[in-house]
Image 1: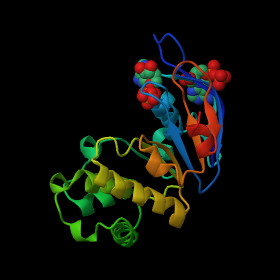
Image 2: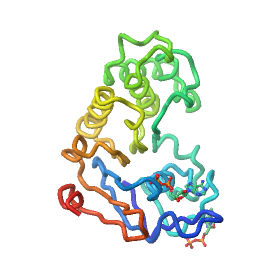
Image 3: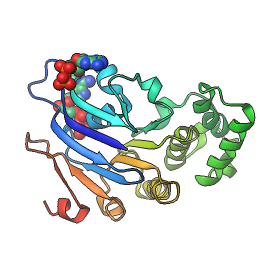
Image 4: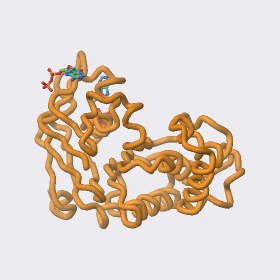
Length: 233
Ligand code: ADP
Ligand code: ADP
C-alpha cells in the first residue's frame, strides 16, 4: 500500500540528509511503527507520504514514494487527501469549526459528497470513535484525548486507505493516550486501515505493530524488522 524506494530527503542548508536511501514497504492493512530520537527524520518520512515533502517544506526528495500506486511527488497533497489522512501531535491549531459534528463534516465538504452520505458518515464516525454523546460540544471544551479522537475522525470520514500519525499521543496524559491508541488499534484491526505511525509509547503499541522502523538519528542506517527484534537493537 505504501512503498519507499531509495528515498532520501535533503533540506536546503542542512549539513546532512534528513533521510537517506530508505527502502520500506507497508502492506495493506498493516501497522508500521516508526521510532527514533528527535531529529531522526520521522516527520520527514511521514511528510513524504502525505506529500508535504517536497511540496510544502522545501526538502528535496530523491527516490520514489507511492501510496496505492500514486507517486506522492507528482500528486499535490490535495490530490492525495482522499487516500491519505494525516494527524499530528496537537490538533488544536488545526480545527476549523466549533463543534464535534461540524469538524467531522468539514473534511468531506471539499469532496462534494451528497449531504445524505455526509450525514451518514458523521454518524458512522461518531459511533466508531465513541463520540456520539459529545456531538454538539464545542471542541474547546473537550479533553485532549477527545480532541485527538475528533481529529482522527475528521480524516476518517473521507475513508482514506492510509492513516499517517505523527506522535498522536505526545501532548496527552497516559489515560488520554490510551484512548487514542485503542482507537488506532481498532482502525487497523476492524477497518483494515493501513497505518504508519511515529509513537513514543512503545510498550503499548509494539504488541500490535506488524513492523517497526527504527531511525537511529546518528547517521546510521535505518533498521527494519519484527517489533521484538528492533526493540532489542
Ligand atoms: P523527527 O520527526 O524524527 O524529530 P524531522 O523529520 O522533524 O525529525 O527532522 C529531521 C531533520 O531535518 C532535523 O535535523 C530537522 O532539523 C531537519 N528539518 C526538518 N524539517 C525541516 C525543514 N522544513 N527545513 C529544514 N530542516 C528541517
Ligand atoms: P531523483 O531522480 O533522485 O528522484 P531528482 O533529481 O529527479 O531526484 O529530483 C530532485 C528534486 O527535483 C525533487 O526533490 C523535486 O523537488 C524535484 N522533482 C524532480 N522530479 C519531479 C517530479 N516529477 N515532480 C515534481 N518534482 C520533481
